[in-house]
Image (cartoon, rainbow, N blue to C red; front, side, top):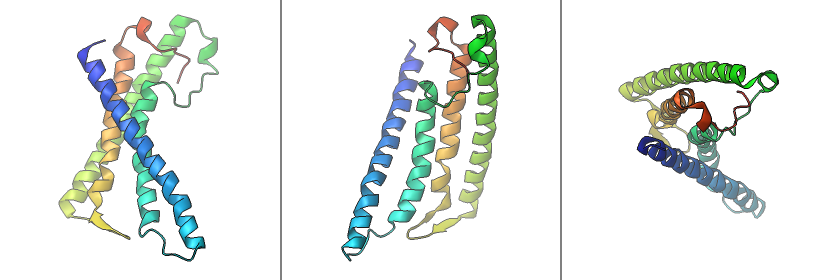
Length: 166
């Protein structure tokens, strides 16, 4: 395993842990808010807005790790019946398509982020903050997913986690 692979794996694991922490916080805040409301006490100010942004961040931050683990949803009905060599070709084509798709989505997300930053757009809900803050996770996540798809393409077949298909 190269130094890049180790460092990249640590980065993706760190983002997955951050994603899990966000989901854990959401899991605690929701019932706490319900309890407070049922007791006639003030609820946590801005909890709903924070939960909405937290769900988005958790999904995007955890996606590259899920891809690395091959834990994403896979449709392997066709590839499962193929011989190993043909299966590898189909999986490589799917990885190439995945890399291209993530790169395009990441580029579009980066353009939206830069446009929001240059306009100085603000989000005004329970909190007020620059809109571009919410847009940072998309290009980051898509760049990391693109790299992971490319890693899957260029690493030797023997190093692959079971290639059941994508």
